[in-house]
Length: 248
Image (tube, rainbow, N blue to C red; front, side, top):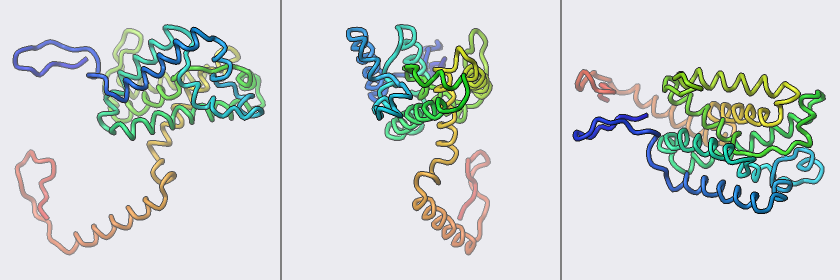
């Protein structure tokens, strides 16, 4: 819910703003896949995520294609609504390239963790081996976690109550964890939990893990800059409400 700042209006508008070209492409791909599987239901057997087929038949494309399949109209409706609601603002903060990278890393990462989860020697995990997992929820949960980290106090309507984003994500993560440990709900929720885990480590430690050479260069340049700064005096200046009142 956003307030209009126009001097000629004082109304409220729903949602995070207009849909970008990137979001239109993602939503369009999901809708196209939904229509295709409605016409040819057998595609779900080849494109959905089945851990046993990934491990033994090497159907690795399922790690990506499962993200664009959905089981029903409400499944795709709520996922695409969440993609717009949380993705639009994050894309404005990150830019389209990083947003797409994050979306696919969390989606594919959630699939990989689901496959690894199915190998655990427990009944609630082994049920996932032959289950067909579909949906963008792994990436959506990753976006949800990122939204909570960037906007922790932004209210999210959870059922009927507005809850701060950081609390809402904690509740949803706990639900995914306990559901993944149950005999009846572990299939999709293992992927939801995987999306949360991958998103957290990507945002917290991804730069050092993915680009170690760049990280070393960054730290070295930062050290050189700080060393040069110590040679100069720093005086306070500017207005009292300036973000940075230091003058070098």
